[in-house]
Length: 283
Ligand SMILES: [Fe+2]
Image 1 (cartoon, rainbow, N blue to C red):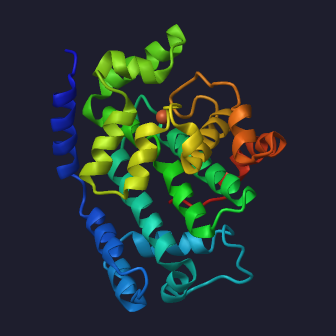
Image 2 (cartoon, helix red, strand yellow):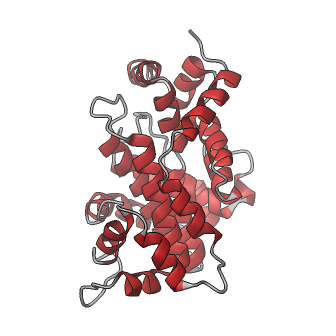
């Protein structure tokens, strides 16, 4: 049966209602005041969760932050990472753990999909660094890169068999996965991801990236989105097929020039990305 858009919406809503309470931790972290952050309150919230303290300590000691010595105190780790980073890590853990669960026979390989998502996030941050973007914005871009294809997991959860058919059709016919999704679901992962982002009340910045990362209509006006589009392409080249999409467009040379990215730097990033992704602890 062809799934129509209203049916998709209702399935996403019922799917979101089943999300584990971990997301409540993110909402509590998210509600903390940015300017007068209460570190003890943040510590208390993180410690109330079974998974997060270990994940955050693994991240802080992973080499990602280049610390000279191992850090043992969660309180110190939170202070060093800051509210924005902690909030983003919690968001990642919440989303990926909730959405992927135990899907050993999923048609979209979870480990490879995470490679693509992490690769895009890391590429986003590297591009942001290259053009001298503020660290807070680079952090937002890292998360945006991680989340841009969120809708694929949504569609997968709604109808795994049908999503498998879309993936197979995309590969066998050589059509973009985006269009195969449209044929099988009546909407693409950008629409499904946007509905979920709204339902979860994610920041409108993330919602826009999820919604428009395949749209080129207003690229000139949106630097942050341009960087995600370029990073997505870089990650697809570094991890062929990992996003579920075997069709990789040409490198966005014109767009790179427009936003000040050196194509040689992008090529180097493609080479380095697999190693940089493997160096990260599980998020
Ligand atoms: Fe996408």
